[in-house]
Length: 54
Image (cartoon, rainbow, N blue to C red; front, side):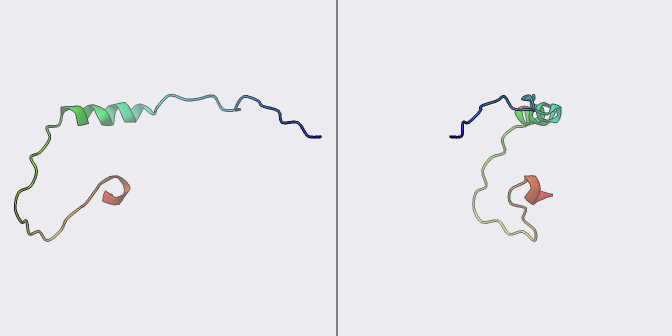
């Protein structure tokens, strides 16, 4: 019969990356823009951000 052995992970948990705190700090200070009203015609529209917006 086989037995399962539970062991601790070999890699200890880590703290969030340092750049995350820096990136989120500017988010709190930025004012929320008003919602768009009516029709808007543009040549280029970037929807989203992150990897898609790069």
